Structures are given as C-alpha cells and as structure tokens.
Image (cartoon, rainbow, N blue to C red; front, top):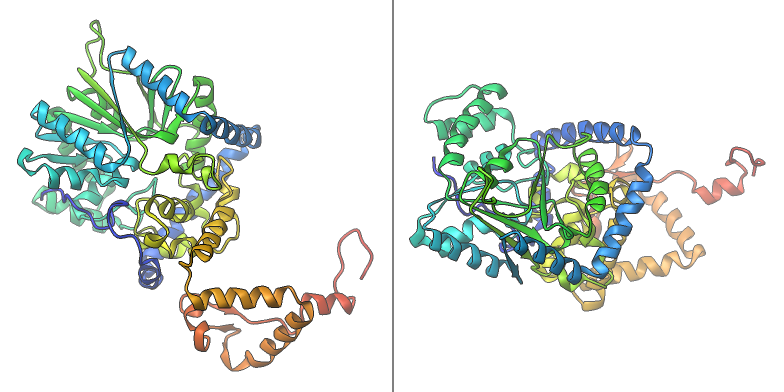
Length: 490
C-alpha cells in the first residue's frame, strides 16, 4: 500500500471554504463526536492536573505572552541572529517567502542529492504548504517516496486522510479503522490491538529510517542566540529523522523563534502540560547544525528553511497575537464547536479556535469566510491558551473585518444591525423578549426548540435552542426575587 501523496484538505493550498457544510455532516457522526469527547475529557483533566501542580503557572503564562510580544517587535533581528548562528556551525539557511519557494528549495536539494526516500517527522508548517503532495507532483521525475514517521501521521497518510487535531492527528479514527489501514499496508490482517499495531509500525518504519536520503522535521522553537532548532515529541522518531539520513532539513515558521535559551525554558514548561498533561514530552531534541568532524552521528548537511507564508504581514497589526501560538492544541480541546465537529470540518491544517483565526489570515477572508463564525465566543479558548492569546477577540475582529469589507452577506449585516438597534434600546428589547416568550410554545419539544422558522432555520439545524424563561432577569430583579450573597435582598 503506497502512501498517498495528495491528502484532501491537507493544507492551506487546497480549498478551505465550506465549514458549514462539512460541520453539518460531522455533527451527525456519533462515533466521531464520541471519540472527540473522550479525548477532550481526558486531555483537559490531565492538563488541569499538570498546571495545578505548577505553582507559578499563571506567572509563566504572563511571561510567555511578554516574550512573544517582545520577540515579534524585533523579529527580523532575532531571525538574522539565528541564521548567523546556524551558518557559523556549518548549516545553511533559506528564507522562504511562501510555500512555493520552500517546496522549490527542498525539491532542488533532493535533485542535487539524488534522493529517492524522504522521511518526515510531524510538522505543521510542512502540512500547511502541502509539502508532500507538491514535491511529488512538481518533481515527478525524481520518483520521491515521502514517509511520515509519527505513528498517527503515518496512519493518516496511508489512509489518505488529513490530520484532525494538532497534537492527536488520528483522533477521528478508531483502533479498528487503524488496524484496517495498517493491515492493507502489511498485506495481511493485523489484530485491532494497540501493541501489535505499534510493533508492526516500528518494524516497518525502521526500514525507512535506515534507508532515507533526506530527513525533514518541523520545529517547535528556534533559539536565536544559539541557532538551535528544538523539537518536542513523544515517539522518538524525530531523532531518527534528523540524525540518520545524510541530509536534515528543518522547516520552521518564522514566528517560532525565541531570543534566548532562558526564554525556551518558559515555553517548554508550558507546552507539554497544555498539550497532553505531561510535565515534559518524552523527547526534546536540540539541533544546531550538521555533525562536526569529531562527531560520529548526525547529518552531513543541515538546512534550516524559515517559512514566512503570510506571517510577516501580521506583525504590528491587530492580529499579531495569532503569531504567539505554540501549537499545543489546548484551545481545540475546550472549544464547544470543535468538540461537536472534530477537525476535518475546518478544511485546514489548523483546526479549532486557533485555526479559525489563522486560516483566514494566511489564506484570505474570502477563502475562509465561514471560519470566524465557527465559535460561540465563550472565551474558553483564551482561558486554556498557555500564552494568553485572546482568540475570541481575534475572531470578533475578523467578523468586523468581513462586515467592513463587504464579505458578510447583506442578510447577515441586516440581522446584526437589527440586533444592535434592539440592544441599544432596553424598552424595545423588553418588548421583543416578551413577544418571543409568547410565541415559543409551538416550537418547543421537551423544553427545547429544535427548529426555527424562516431565516432562523439554519441557526437551529445543528443545535438545540433552550426555551426562554417565563420572566427575564430584569423582571425577577424588580420583583425582589434575586439576591446576592453578602448583600441585601433586592
């Protein structure tokens, strides 16, 4: 079974728009919703426990935000410093303005080295630019075989499916489905037993590790003062990808740079705790260049590709905070929308709240106009974010930009204008609320409305609308039926 090159919806090069249609299908998939619910529950529990045991977690969060803020203010200087440090140790640095330049650099490198087999570790940046598909399609004469080596990513690649979670790429897949995929790769049935499946994967992937011509990794962080690329993983495949082939290519988004090693320590203490509830990932690898003359292991060549792909356009603007993300996935796990739809509905490498922000910014508002509305704006994403990115506020700004640029539909603009008109006039709001309470009866079943008439129909297609209370908070307040602890009855 050959690994599939072009996985649908793999990155930002493919079509993204269509969240609403995909979400309608996803919310009816009980198996998917159950899998997401179990993962989210366990991950949130582990995360909360890990952060509760870290006394200075709030201070670390604040410090992480300030480091990112200060880094972005001088990003060009930090990138130049990192590039200089890498080159001083014999590495090569390439600044890629976009995915096309990154693909061309790596493709020409593969041609020069006569490469046939490329192994990869988990990398959101390469998923974003659809590196695998484009290398195979744009350099067919090289006959490249590109193999993902993160277990979940490899199974997703074999199945021809994109990852559905930043940290857990096959969250959407049951072990029985994983066994089917790996059985086809094996050429004989494999039991749906995790231990047997992992043993098969380890055996098969080890052959790839030992035969690879080029290894491609991502980067969780890049340290400017030392020129060190840092990756945090749990499977150890990254070390084999980076050190066994004669050529190592690290593809890093330019926002991943941190000025100093002491800054790195802040993020490493937050990353694993926020992602999986671990104190640290099992493996944290540091690479600063090719192997030295007295070093027996390591690549002969080390290439660092610093990917912009639209990031620099966000610097200094109202969306700069989107660049502070460390890709822990915590905002996905707590998001009420992601927990109903899973990741594939977003149609992008980046799903959940951070995906709903980043994708329109990098892809364009017209290409992803549904995504800023894929949020309840409850703020749970902001509370979970280890860097304190105000994701709900960024989503509101994106919605405002849609309205200002005319991307929002006329009906939507009229609806929000009417809403604003009513909210600014308490008397009118009260009349409207009473009228709604009076007519809701025929729409209710078991205390909730599962369908609404006219233009509100779509709003209730995938959610249950709770009934309106017999009396509003204001009315109960006036009647003295609401009081607060420590205050007088009022």
